[in-house]
Image (cartoon, rainbow, N blue to C red):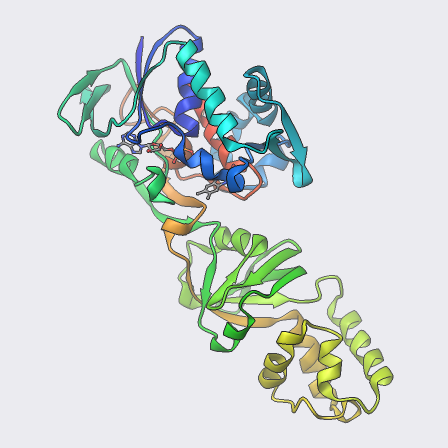
Length: 407
Ligand SMILES: Cc1cc2nc3c(=O)[nH]c(=O)nc-3n(C[C@H](O)[C@H](O)[C@H](O)COP(=O)(O)OP(=O)(O)OC[C@H]3O[C@@H](n4cnc5c(N)ncnc54)[C@H](O)[C@@H]3O)c2cc1C
């Protein structure tokens, strides 16, 4: 059988490898001058290629359509990914949070290992080759047409073109056009794992401030809709970023920003009651000291003025003179520091794209289109996305393996 794969990224290369290993003839078409351009920038150049958890623990990190990827994850999980790369001669290591990296800390080792194996398996790799159109006859995919007009016949076509994030790596949404052209529905692509821009001008002075052991939560029209884990975040000048902010972005990207408030809980380890008592104790200790001293004991210094202003309490006021309402307001703001979301950062700067080919029209067992036979969609082009930690590359590998199982 001759199989044509569009896109030489993580999912396309893995599918090529697994299908060629079964003895099929595979042609891999990549519009860039080299394979796996996005892999080079993953994990800050170190490539967090998977996460050493499986089953429900893995699926808990999939934000969009975890049920759809269930059978792929069962078929090919993180231990399969690790086994493949170790067999390809790439020693791996597991770091904090079960994140898996090449021992060398070089993302290029991942791409090179895949490429070496593809060459050994005689996969026909065509670089600088951009697909324009998918060819379908009698409702069966039968090849592709390139931008230069050339046609390539095939018995099956796999679309592995990625999303629209970081378009300089080649992911420019071509797969959505291919899918649409044969009648597939596209779920509107949204940025995921991305920084946030805020309306609050008073926080611009905080640019560069990073916070540890805090939590953010999102409210839609006053109702809490998402709470992040406790972790790190930072102020960027016009907004916020950092691990827990990225995680939050993935969970709110399908909601209108004007309806969203982002709140910071500076004291996630203390409940409202415990925090209020702590403040009361501090006040007894600080006695005649100023309100600013109380805040300095509870917050980074650069936040003190902002807190005092928002609370409308003179920072020189003696702590002993704070009213009960004022003490309660301090306690409340420490756990509910409210910020108004302007927008999520642009999709071009998002780590992944949420949205894409609607999974209702894709068979979960093998990633084949329910509309056109022998046409498959794998990786980020699908409406699937996960949190940071190696889960997105694993989704690319798992969906590639499901697809390969059909050959
Ligand atoms: C900065 C950054 C860091 C990341 N770090 C991690 C990480 O550490 N761990 C993790 O799990 N995930 C990470 N991700 C996410 C992960 O890289 C992607 O989810 C994954 O690469 C998606 O793989 P893919 O094969 O679906 O698509 P892509 O890797 O985007 O590959 C698609 C390929 O298709 C090609 N193509 C597109 N259109 C055409 C066409 N018309 N003709 C021919 N070829 C075409 C493109 O050139 C591209 O090479 C990161 C993403 C970014 C942007």
